[in-house]
Length: 303
Length: 312
Image (cartoon, each protein chain N blue to C red):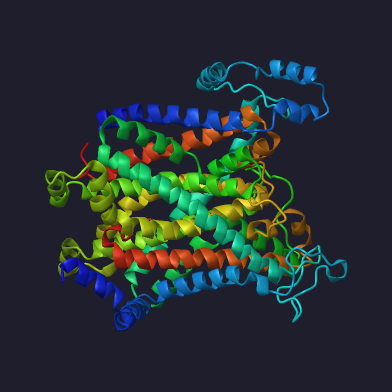
């Protein structure tokens, strides 16, 4: 039997092996929870948010349905978080809002991370004049306050949720680019890169198989923290009316608009959505911090 | 040192050029024609064309860009398309509001966050440290506009208290401070949280170094070591971060000014976005970006003075 075949069989063999893998992963997870209780709390908050987004259809009250008789009702067993000025159930709107936040957050971070990683990898590796020009462009993007830039791009693209995601993604690009480029510059002088080149590997192969895997932990840490940031930006945009368009429930928009007139008579309207934003962002920040401590001691203390 | 400052200023030129290019491209591509927006969708094409010509929007984009850039260099941004006052006058009216908010927010960061960071490090793993870490982690996650909403809503319910009406001038104390301090604190919360965390980790790093042990060994008290020996080195990166945070702070002001109805630069920019008031929007955002760049230049230069190891 050749070596390759034996590997193939091993991969196929495995109820026992796979159970072993599962146990190994669980042990890693248990150790993470013990050593980084705050990180585990962050993970729990994120899981809660994902569960809310996934199971939103199970909430009996419709997030959009308006009941003239049920306007501005305080929290009660029928309406856990009360109702708003149009008689909509706030609990249901908060749960559905988690869908919006996660959807926007994940796609925006995917856009920002992919863009920033690609630019950072290429310019860091190629260097020279291209690097110079692209980095000045990134500096220019960074000179704009992130929120203002997102507002202008969102306004430019018009009121469409997928374009809001792209707007937030673009804002996240320069930060990712900077970290990835720095990491590439750190990895590039290593002997294994030179060795790969001596062996005749192409630039694309060196980038994809030798440099990228070494930069990956930094990217994952950054993406986790960026998710919290993206959720915050989405809610801010929605708050000023440039984010997720109605009627889709969005935490930021629940705190703005006509509803604000009723906050003094119905303060519960102001509490739940803000709490949801805070806990969601907190979850991603805590997990990001813990991952940074575990994976990348070099970044400790950095932003 | 002079050479370094000169080089940094020269390096700013391509970045400024990039800023102007990005800004112009973004704003002029905004769909929703200002001419149509002002005349209504029922206006005759003839009228729209006339207005576009009047606003000089009918020429090739590169000509518009060069004209705008030349104007910007002379600080002449034309007139607001909305209230027809000169863009510069609108900015001059809004600037003091934003400036006061920014200065107050910065003061809160420096006066409160830095001592708390030091305290947190000095009390590492005891309850003040835990409380401060909890608050700084939470502070990063709480959206400023929500905090602002709570601060407006609940005192009104519980004590029937509201911030003074109108916009009191700087000489109109104490109304002025009451009006500005709360929004400034709302914006400063998240930036302060970052400063507390960084100050703590920098102090912990410095406190582990040998010259600190030497200082203790020669019999200095804890406070003397902390303030006279550790703080000097721990403070340096914190100064940089405070500079970097300015962009975040300025962006946060856009929303806070909206919530508290303060007629500052941010609110002016937001109104300009919704009203498609190109000249006003361009000038406001350009001002925000340029002040960010200048602040960071100043911080970098200060860094050189603070840290004699940095040789340029």
